[in-house]
Image 1 (cartoon, rainbow, N blue to C red):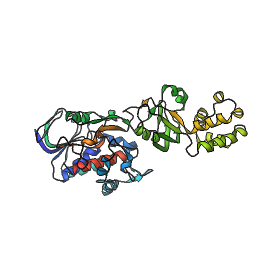
Image 2: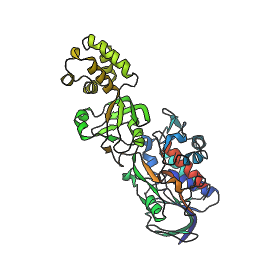
Image 3: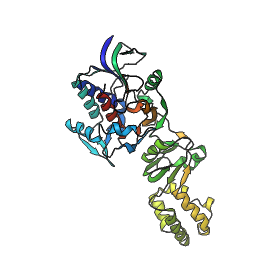
Image 4: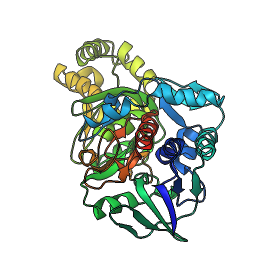
Length: 395
């Protein structure tokens, strides 16, 4: 049996951050990663360039059942802190939009940053380690991996969520939480497309690939951003963010022209009717929105009758359709298509000062395994850095 001060399960963003901080404080640290290479999700993130943080990240960008937990962690390690690390290694980066920061070259630069910093402090990283049984005595955790048995006074669970199963995602973190009696908020795919109900499939099935900027609302949440129609539902940044706030059975509303109001569209439609259906709004609408989609939304003569004969009531209904297409998604595209997982270990079970489980001294949880999920745009990596840093300062 090999003894360590700290064993970290998971060599991803949160785990490697925690490992370096703990080792810098003189701890003997071991990272056990089940994949053959560290941080596989970093490698594929941001189209291979890793959207590593967001300049505008605040606690308001996160969804959790315990909102008071996030600010205390966030204040300890901010986007500026991680940017300083990137700059210290002369990694070139750029802002894409809305504060989203990406590597100029490759996500490999971020992985090298994390692995090198950890190695400089003596962190040992073992790859290809499938963790089996975990036992706990009064002062140590015993971890049986696929090859060896290790012990440590402190165990950090940085195993990630259930998204990207093709990259080795597992439910190990939840098994550990259950083993030690910690509550789990039901997990679900997040930052993922939403599937059409069957009755809507025929309406949109031949429009896959269309991109446009729309307004989307889900309950009290709303956003104007890019949307993409796929063969099975709606995706793109605005719909991925909507999935964070959507719950099964809830209605989604799409405003195809958020630049206008229902009233202004209705007034313009009446003018277009007087012009024989070839007026300013109809032409503008067909140019702004791909014509195939515009015809599907508004200009279906068989359904609405001759344009010149449409009543004010029918025109008002058309205006409302344009500004509020409503549907109840059949579900999400699933974990294989999800950027992250929503839900996880209940943060009410965790100390916001240390990331340690309140019921189990020496057991820590960080990163995506916790019930804290960020919006699209670098926010989830910032949570990984912050939670990993806080735990690293405490173990």
